[in-house]
Image 1 (tube, rainbow, N blue to C red):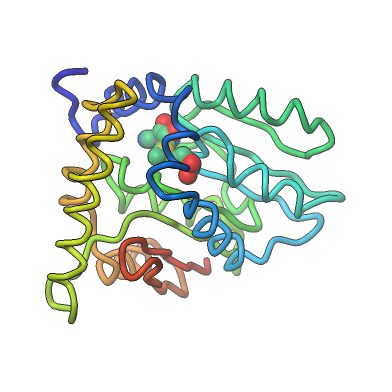
Image 2 (image 1 turned 120 degrees about the horizontal axis):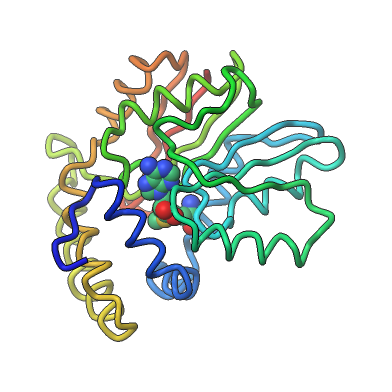
Length: 240
Ligand SMILES: C[S@@+](CC[C@H](N)C(=O)[O-])C[C@H]1O[C@@H](n2cnc3c(N)ncnc32)[C@H](O)[C@@H]1O
């Protein structure tokens, strides 16, 4: 893991396998619990309804899939897909404590899910797109599995658009947050090298306007990148 390469599928899988047991606790700590608020915004865009079939890509330990599963009852179903086995094991543990929830888990690659075309009414991907070796291919796969008119919400850190007003302040704040809070906290949890990659992964992440363009090229009819948390996070709102 010493030579971790952001975007390398094997390294990314190994990274999330290794931090899985501490992932939820760290997420709460590093976002002061706010990741739940941002995830609620993603669910808000999706407007999940009873009977729908929804997909959570890069589901990790299943936060969003579990929320969505509650909302598609009765008659609906949610599939959580992730590349790494360990987060999925924890997701399964969580869902088996709520056995009434219509949710299933599958190990797979978000770039080539093998899921049938147009088979989902809606989809979410939280903090997944930044980890994919090819975000454009990830958006294309997301579009492929959605039925026409289906909604998707892609939540991640926002990489400030240099040309936008306030970009310098946003970037400065983000750098300070990553270096002064994330890195020391990750060090205290013994997962420093796993979190040190965050800043690097953000540097090669498309900005909001670039994400909108990539989504349109992937065939989405609507793509709007909404800033959250004073521009620290971004929610890409999509309609297939
Ligand atoms: C930062 S976690 C986010 C987990 C969850 N969505 C959340 O918001 O709490 C990113 C997840 O993406 C998964 N991932 C990375 N690359 C992937 C790929 N190519 N296909 C599927 N999952 C992938 C990782 O295994 C990890 O669980």
